[in-house]
Length: 82
Image: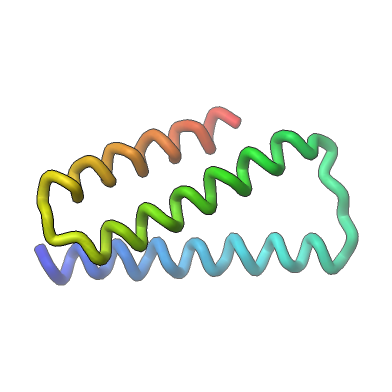
């Protein structure tokens, strides 16, 4: 599972980098969001997701890894619902 887990973590890192780059580009171009509360919530969820991915990569406890997987699934659900 080590290799598969590392691949998922690498994919998550690349995803987070792309999201951050898009957000920086949006800020540079001065495009304002129609709903600032929604943008704040999405940004907060993205940060929480990034923190969980970092924790997932450093934990050795399978129980904690499962908790993190569940938390990541919930964050994804909230992002989709927003």
